[in-house]
Length: 94
Image (cartoon, rainbow, N blue to C red; front, side, top):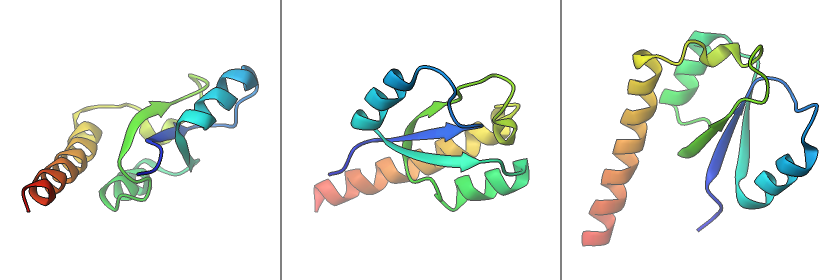
């Protein structure tokens, strides 16, 4: 099994390169880059970023594709995580 996925929203990092390097060694970092909210929602539904376990937003003023992180986005990402969890549970019973 590969490394867990961390979703990086927003701009490239400007500071804390050592921390980002440590994160990169622990997580498979997927980028959303700058996309509109509807495109971001669709990407979540399509699992474009995979089953991420964490979100990294290096600067509060970027990453607008996820803003606001409200029930609408939580439902989409939670639904995907729940479906993945159920698939894993079903496979382990087989």
